Length: 74
Image 1 (cartoon, rainbow, N blue to C red):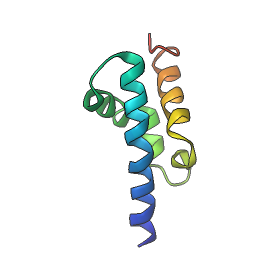
Image 2 (tube, rainbow, N blue to C red; image 1 turned 30 degrees about the vertical axis):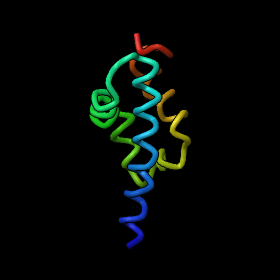
Image 3 (spheres, one colour; image 1 turned 90 degrees about the vertical axis):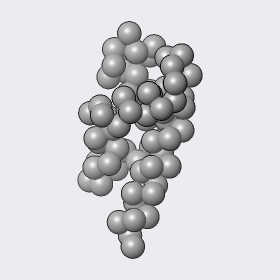
């Protein structure tokens, strides 16, 4: 049960982070979510030891955009 709750929390962090990424990059939320989840940040988000899912969705989006090359993902 605890594992399911953690995964749910991880999913709940990823979705609004993807929405913020989509708004920043002016792209579709689905595309942003796919990019986030296939990135190193997305992988870390689902790593229970790193606990990225404890971060706010804005922090996750910021980490993703910085890793992508800057605040605008360039």
